[in-house]
Length: 345
Image 1 (cartoon, rainbow, N blue to C red):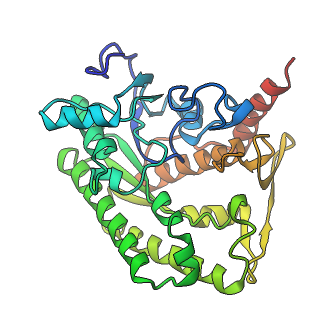
Image 2: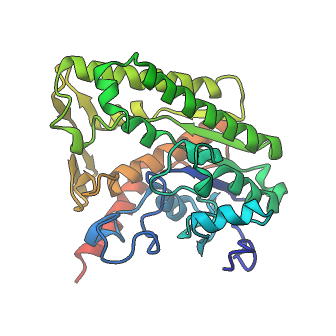
């Protein structure tokens, strides 16, 4: 697919499908991207990278006939080239170049400055470039959805500050900045595509990720981090409270419900999740599918499959979309198919 014409030569979208775009960081960057994560690298699943799928990849496989993230393409430019092209009035396309679904603009390492291109984030700004792509098919995006899952990296970078003082002016500045950038992103999308729905995903502190289990193990630090996380999400959630075109996905509550959380004293106390009789998953890190997190600290197959199940349900309920929920039985069969491929001789 040529960089200058990302829509040329693409396969026809499934009849009646809803286009779905994604804005975000490594939590939404497809794991099978062999340009960003070349074979042999430790990134995204190690030896099981073809089975440790990311949530957009799972939605595309399980509900691609209803939610269309676009065709799988190798498309984009380096950040510098994209920025230089924009500076002389040319189309930038997507940056960085990666293998992913056409409408997935998420890239690893992205932060709130990359939403609109603020604070030297212009090389990898996502929303203006996505909107330029949406403009090529304006009638279809009247029925479209954009999932914004950004702010995670900004928050994790402040974890020490959160644990020390959740009322820190520095922390408030980070929260206010991310909220302002997400608000600007929503404003730009709706200025050009007023009927498009937008799902804003909340942030989580990573306190419940295995990499942090040895840290912040006191009641005070745990409470402080949780307080800071609630403040960030409350500010973010206000953006979605008065507009039926915008909805909220509470990621912190989702993690607590599925995996549990720390005790009141700050000690890790987590659930084991059974995917039927197929897989027993613990909140541990490693590239084996029995781990909730991969060795590189990104969500594994089971985590992402359950997240995909939940985001489909949330999109259906929030916007009254004609989507078929992913049942637990269907999810079990999907995960079993991935496990079987590993076990096959």
